[in-house]
Image (tube, rainbow, N blue to C red; front, side):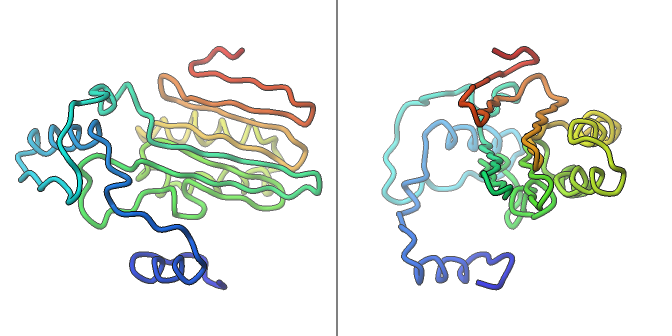
Length: 209
């Protein structure tokens, strides 16, 4: 499609036309996230929704998932191929008990996801701050306009600009030369990388192995 973004019914029709596998809503249901939603709504004094059709009750399989210190909702990737092409992709679990119609930073190209010929970025964190600061694009733009490195550009945005505004989170980024940056201003961020030689590095907190 020539369009940058499609949503709701139009996006679903487009997906069906291109034979994307479709599954029932119950496919996305997990007991732990359902229970987290119930607790969040109760704390806000909001009405409880009905359990989705076709989903039976069950035990809370991972009650800690809604704990602010245990965030597992976002998966991002940035890749560079042998021809110098850079791609970025991000998937998010969203925000528990968000207002209906709320759109986070992940689908906003330039907010939580962005790639051009010199830089690719995937982000995780408090989406509203990433949208307002156009974080993913800003990192690549700083490289182009200021002539600074990927690491410096990423640190300027994540460790300074976001921190000054109270926005928490982090990014993974890659440039056209294979340099990477993965700064975060939160307690930790699950992350890993693999280079052209197959060397793998993973980390959660500040240390790597």
